[in-house]
Length: 365
Image 1 (cartoon, helix red, strand yellow):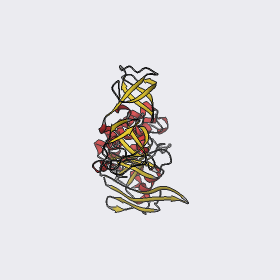
Image 2 (cartoon, rainbow, N blue to C red; image 1 turned 180 degrees about the horizontal axis):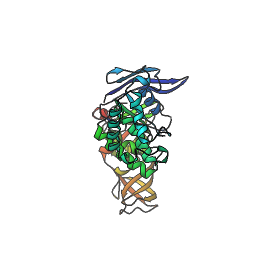
Image 3 (cartoon, one colour; image 1 turned 90 degrees about the horizontal axis):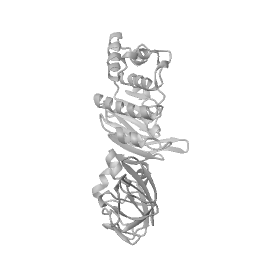
Image 4 (spheres, rainbow, N blue to C red; image 1 turned 120 degrees about the vertical axis):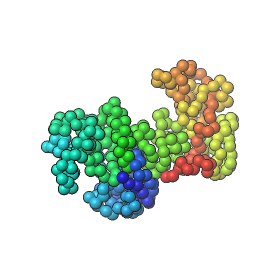
């Protein structure tokens, strides 16, 4: 397997810029997620790594070799598509063996490797079946097997579970992560599903409009979002934003919100006179009679062990995830409490986080 380094990668289609100066590193053996909404540039980035698209500018280093302008056929990479891309006239064994036959491998070696991959994926019993009669899950296993059997330097996957129903998709996600752990393979995986990315990824790149918004571990991205876009895109419900005009300077440790002083992480830059957004995750909002900052309960949503309570406050709407046993009465005004360590602050104009240097390691986009 191999490390993949992306440096200042750019892709233009005429006057449209699909990817803008992206830079990040995919470690050897990592399960790496490219995450973002439709049209953000994640699939274009994956296709450039694969060699299916050549970049307008920038470098792609595969195991130390710059392959940015090298054709796909000369890159030791396997691609798994969402729609399986199997050969319908071949059975499962023939589909798995096809790439090895193209490489001129000996028949005995092909059979050995196909049998080994079939055991890993649990598809030994269907090796002689036609692919047209298989379930969606089995067809996806065959598609994965055809990539694995080549033993490439890296696996690239473009929403490979997108065509499966929700229940089986979750099951296959667990299987795919377990398979990755057994093989210790470098894997780059495109998805628009933030839950899938958080569940499976060692590292995540979050993209928007062709730009890398943030690069880091799932926990770094969730706990310390680098931009308001990341904070809003990651999490269900997403982060709350309370907007106000800042009157504080570098080093400030509190903000004045509707007449209430709220302790915040130390700021890294002056933000006086700017519109500021205070961000807090729903699970980090506590409802308390003693809370000085107040909100009116607008709605409740029961979720079994927890409930989502929607409150209207002077600076915006706040959703709180609280225990289902805690009473929240619609129309009642209650106090809200926030833990300083869990708060984020953003420049509402640029969307960038306002944080201390101690926290900047999470922001590598």
